Image (tube, rainbow, N blue to C red; front, side):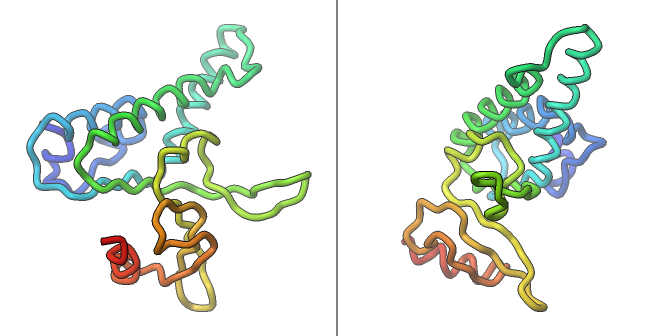
Length: 171
């Protein structure tokens, strides 16, 4: 039984291993193997999960006197991200990865915001939404989409019903 099922599908947190990349992958593998009624998996803090793995490897390499050049400290996090994404394609669930944002640069100038993950991590993702505040309302901006009803740079209310209405246009 997965830790998610032990918690009645409500929560898989740090005390359960949610801050350890290998544990998250293991939970997804459990969800693939076992029957359950869950329809959506949300990984909140994917950036933190990725960055903690990079930091741990950086500390390991430097304590052993090894170099972190050429992204050596990122290799385990990138490997686990690819492994997770391969598992997510086998998972019969909708998946949301919630990431922090970082400034996006072009020619040394800030041109916008980007998800704080490895540059290749979002290749297989079908839609990327940026959440932001406009006045007193929360909005989504479409950053990447493979769905015609979600045009790049479109904005809409950060609301499940608004998302569902736009998404159902696909059917």
